[in-house]
Length: 326
Image 1: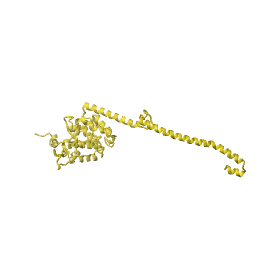
Image 2: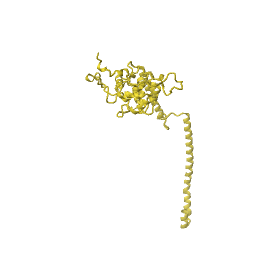
Image 3: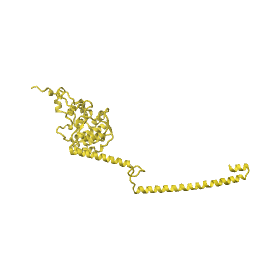
Image 4: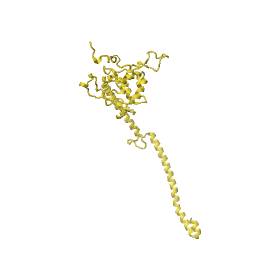
């Protein structure tokens, strides 16, 4: 019996090992936590984040065509050399410059048909992005919740953080998604979602779209349950209101303005301080008034002295008069 040419051995290896040599990371042996000889740098397998079963397809709930293109790409096959979480994070730092599923400009959303159909080995799917191949590599490593938290708070690259959020969006239990993302919905760190030629965004703005939108650059994100989606929208709205109220309070604390015009309402302590300051100002004004009175009296006496001097001068000779006047 002749084999089908399409699967005549060339796909057998991929069927048996779909992810190639990309295998899970090494974990600390179960029950070896108290063992002094145990390697405490290894993660516990009990802390691995389980992938939520949004669908029966599996594969991190990614688009099936995207997963197949990732598995057949030479770059992903080469990632098998990276055996630890730290190695993969370093690779993200060097290679990831955008976070779309496909390389921009290589993917067409319409389906191919006829002579260009996938059955003939030709596809319009495009080239999977480096970021998503590294994301799927993290999935094959079976990373833990502790490692995801390290990615979200990483300071070296926004793309390390972005892949952490993408991992959560695809694998996390939807009921826990807001708890993970809440501290970052207003994060101001900038990144290029579609590469340096695309518009610049921020982690917070991009993350909001990830939580509220279904389509993501040519692929569909896992559909959140309706109650969860409504709850996320409500909490985002509450977060926006809280931020606006905080900005209003900070802006309102401007000295010298009454309440309702950018100032804040005075309390008893404020009124006491203002009264003491007014008393000091009044005392200073009194001193200024007394000094002005003294100067005024002196100015009033000056004409009398001048008149007496001129009368005495008229009774002197010219020379004596000149000396008296000057």
